[in-house]
Length: 181
Image 1 (cartoon, rainbow, N blue to C red):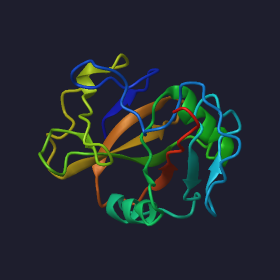
Image 2 (tube, one colour):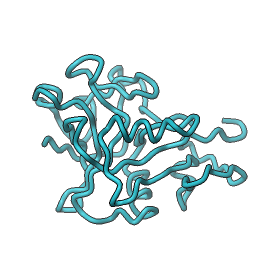
Image 3 (spheres, rainbow, N blue to C red):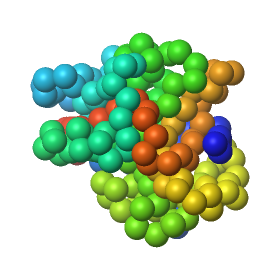
Image 4 (cartoon, rainbow, N blue to C red):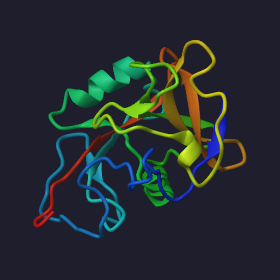
C-alpha cells in the first residue's frame, strides 16, 4: 500500500483550486435542508453543509459496489474529501475513530492507468500537486486503481491506492445546494 499524509486541500492538476464534492465548504450553513434516510449532516456545518452516509464498520464492499450504493441515492457519490477538517469531522460524526480504518473515495484510474480522476466530476486527482506528499508508485502496480483515505496505526490520515476489488468501508456524500450557493 502507498500512504500519503493528507494536508488541508486537494489541488487540481492545473493548480486551479480545490477538488470538491460540489456544494461544500465556503462557510454556508444550510440548516433547513433535510438529509435522506440514513444520511446526516456534520455537527459543524461550517466545514461542509453536505449530507453523508457511513457504511458502518461491518459493511465493507468493493469500490464498484460502494459506488453503486452511493449513486442509488439521487445526486450522491463516493466521498470527495475537501479538507483534513472534513475527514476529521466525519470520523467524529460516525465514530470511525479506530486506527487502521480505510474508506473509499470517488477517485480512481479506471479510465486510464495512472491518471486518477474523481468519477463525479472528472477532475484530475494529481498526487504530485498535493502539499502533503509525493507520489511515484500509485497506478504503476498493476491492479491498483481506486483511492481510499486511511487512518493509519499512528492516527495519521493518508491517501492509499488499492485494488478496486478490496473490501473497504465507504462514505457516501450528497452535495447540498445552499441559498445563494
